[in-house]
Image: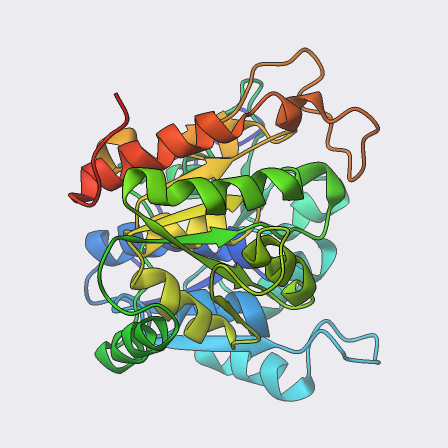
Length: 356
């Protein structure tokens, strides 16, 4: 049924589909199950993925994707994309476009393709640029389930599945070599990613430092990871508050090289941000430390796969603030909580003994 309550004609089987999620690396990872569900249902269908340069890397080398298209966000014109990309989208002759972002630019791009089936969220006037709209839900659901609802709009009933980033064997070998150079094989290696651009999502720095010091108690060793602009924070945590580094630091890497290091770890510990999705998508047991973020939406990962959620119920969640004077939601998570979570993740991976 459409949004006015009438019956829609059956949607024809697609030969070419475009999936768009223009921005944010973590969200691009979270839409990969949509692409896998499409490929599973229509194995002969050609599927393209469109995103800005960084999020597009989540789709690189994915076996279900034929082409990854990159949107240049630095355009100075009023066009939603470069003329070359626009004409390429038009010539491709898509049967379906699944817009998983739903901002004005992505809606215009979906309409520009001329695809007879265009799916997108029911937001403001731009909903009229879609042939099938996805209505909002009243109760929080996981981000993966939210994206899969776009396929329900065209008559599919996709099963929930975790995202999977596909690294080449060469990328995996390079990640193992880079990790080996920083921290030779031996006791389990736990990656620590502490950075986030928003202060309200950062677990206190001194607790990460204490966690690095405590990991040997469970037979593990720390490696501190740094994204762009996070190198100074990573070095302070690695130094443990003293002179000289107590743990190695890896930073300044291109995104997929960074993911290749994560893939070689025994466990990843991270605050909210794209690494909290990259770890599970690389099948690495991940300890996710969440403060103001809704865990039922943004940590849709299972303890049965080794993933551990650290989050406290608090009256003010979700606040969606970038800064907060109190930070109780993160202050209530102790170093002991994190150490136990790492031990559980390592035990799942067969790494270290669990804490009694």
